[in-house]
Length: 333
Ligand code: KG4
Ligand code: ZN
Image 1: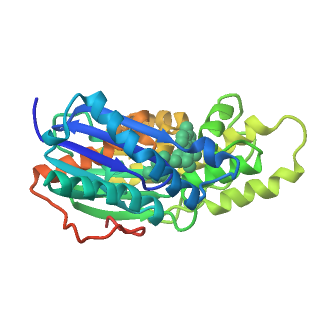
Image 2: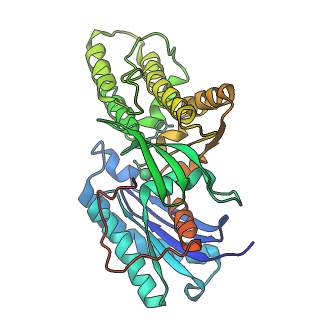
Image 3: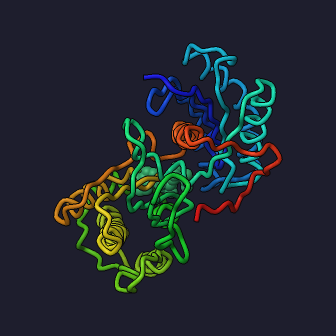
């Protein structure tokens, strides 16, 4: 199957990523230079370190992607890049590089909302265009429930009022002395633990809306920790993870039934979580609702999802204005 050939760049946070996509689903290259090891000793992302590293990595990564795809720059129909939200100094590296490339190649440029990249990622690989659905985006920076009506037309259903789910995973992992990023570590340890040992709060489960809150859960873990002795880490990880997953799953399924939508998707870094994947699959099945989960390789930050979102927009005639700036607070809804 053919279609437009699009190169896209993602540098919203601490991953430098370049992808080349032909049509909707022929991924010719998806290169990621992770900075996780670099930020690990600080226990989180340091913006200046991140942007300097993007600058060092971006050009070799573009050349590597082009080499892997086996295409030449003259073949690109369009260049895309993440416009926001994210760290401004990180965004500017990929966004300006992509604009420069588009100008040099005399091709159109498409700035992509990072959240739209996550939101559409569960549809990647399908020959059909994304359709009406209720979409949970759970990452280190966002926990948001959105109804997709059509590409570019989104309705906000709910969001976190404080910490994002991934942020809660990372903060609780830090309290437990686990390395950054904490989500995969908690997921791994939780498999060895008892999720019912500690009764942790399910904040806003009965709030009657589709908002979330995770800071109380993190605080509950902080107050519990000094009282614990012996072997508790795996049980605490399992109990914490269960509390997060239960709220995410119940609110997402409730949102779908309330909206009368029969497809649910989950994307973003936390959608890699094994318990979340299992529990939402069980809940969707018993509610008779279809489910699309982002592939784990497309869940954490990557450029394939940005290339895909740019492609869906390109196919609908959308083009960005070169004068449009990167926006660290870019909103999707
Ligand atoms: O989407 P992402 O790469 O970056 C943002 O846009 O924020 O998400 C990163 C987040 C981190 O908080 C990380 O701890 C979390 O995703 N994460 C997980 C798992 N894998 C990554 N959280 C829970 N379980 C996992 N298996
Ligand atoms: Zn992300």
